[in-house]
Image (cartoon, rainbow over all chains, first blue to last red; front, side):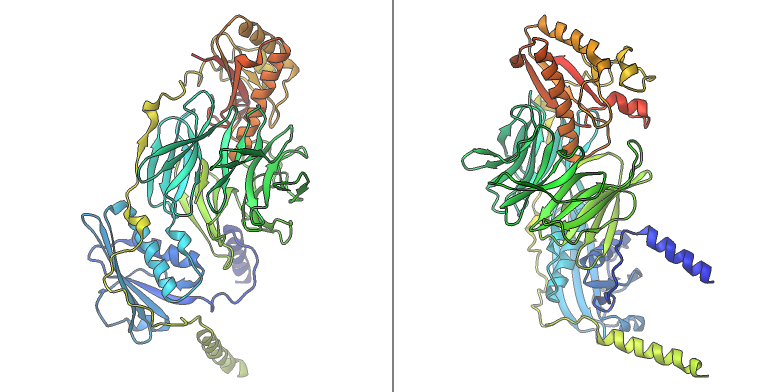
Length: 412
Length: 195
């Protein structure tokens, strides 16, 4: 029996991405049950609601799928040990509509009721996210509106061809927004997600465009021989960090959108890429091979000194930053080819409090949410790929399978 | 006997503790948005879908051209017919993570300089990588390879203004098998005349 328990414990540890964190998080989350009051059974929608509650870090949702009546005042006695009940009615005809009732489990009293409608059925996942964020707000829990945002990503289709897609964070909703040609490195241009930048290879040299996702209006921003990537956008949206090579050498530049002026930030006869603003945009962190392998460095925008941020790993080739926090991908196995272990680490711009966020598989493309509370990453394990999320405050993690084609770049 | 009673007592205490510490809403008198239509503009607006196939993108004839399936590294690639360049140019192959031109590639560089000297057209030098590496770093690595070839051509007398370099990162593989030989064929620089 002991051996069986030990085996189960070991399997559990190695099956999930989780750091060892001893805390009383179970009792800190609200226990909630979900009842589907729709006339047509839709367990997918139920699962999306479950995911939303879990990754929020604020709810402990019952995994049991239950049918019921939206307006019925009777609550099953088995649910009395919950704090809250969410009842919903999802109707999908000529668009989709959702009505939710949020009840106190102890007496069935209604706390909140709301209806939502969208013109297209395929955006139903956003209804779930919106409903859960509304309930979260009703209870005055810390903001989780990041889950309402679009994820934008590029993926390869055939050699020298790619497509750029929009998705909800679970990837249940996906829509190709630019297809044909080779269009790469999408990066949201504003917090409202009305436009994004991307690099197009339709001309002789790469060109950076900004496109409005609602009107399709496209604006040419810059061109560069060699390569051109928008790595980061300042908070006010007026400055960009570009990796470009006007003289055949990839370096990081700050681009002023108003004046069109470029300021060269790094000067190195090797590889400097992936610039991200940190420390109130007074500095950047970036990836460089100036020590002979890819690693994370920091530099003030208007000073020459450069300092190393990360002191471990064989190849730290991608990073993202929020305020003074940094996440980066680090190769931890020796294989030049084939399967390698890449893990995502969290550290600060001073290199302090470094800790791993993943433990298995090949984990790449770390990206902070807009509020810095959650980290997105792409995991490859065996022959399968998934998009993963880690809530930094609660250490809750979630993964959603993604199919087929190789993701080139992602932003949210 | 004591143990017999201890377990249920502890269980009851634990249940009390957990329920007492549960997170409560600080204010449950939130506005009851009865039958509101969603105020989430991001789920109401419909986005565009653009097909750029009509925008005159790169011709893709370099992909999958004349590629042998038996080559395994840059040394053997040099002496073979493996090539994904066009217009008389020969592709250059690189070691894992590297961007220096290997001695085994010098004959190909000499040939490429000769071809370049005979044309008045612009030459496009395309840097490519294998699938290992992600994001921007791989594109910068492809760029370093293209720059190394351009600099070598300049050293052999080809005018710098005649050449343009572009990195395609890992986006343009000529081989997709999970073998070392296949990866080696993708770590390359291709040359083409700009039409």
